[in-house]
Image (cartoon, rainbow, N blue to C red; front, side, top):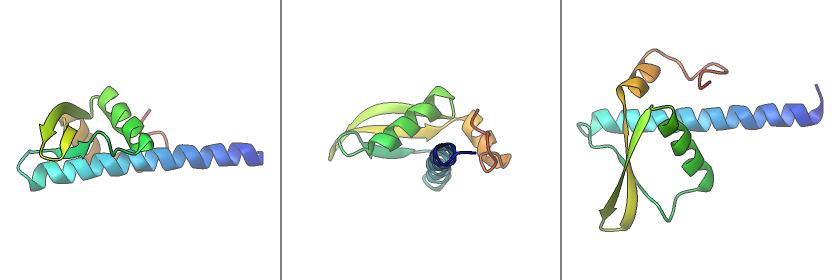
Length: 99
């Protein structure tokens, strides 16, 4: 394996871990707040996080609703039944689980 291939694999693992961490956070918030979801300001969202949220939404692991709160425009993310099953079945910790 070349150095470049090793770097790519590290980037892929980092992105998978980021998606899992965001999904787990949305899962935790969902149950801690009786289903209210996580609010994220649109203007302050890190571009890599935005891509991760979009990916999770495309997989139907989370839902997204655009809202206006006192701080401005935000996205409210809630976990779906598919996302809950993914977390509770212990997936997301092995390579390729998001594929």
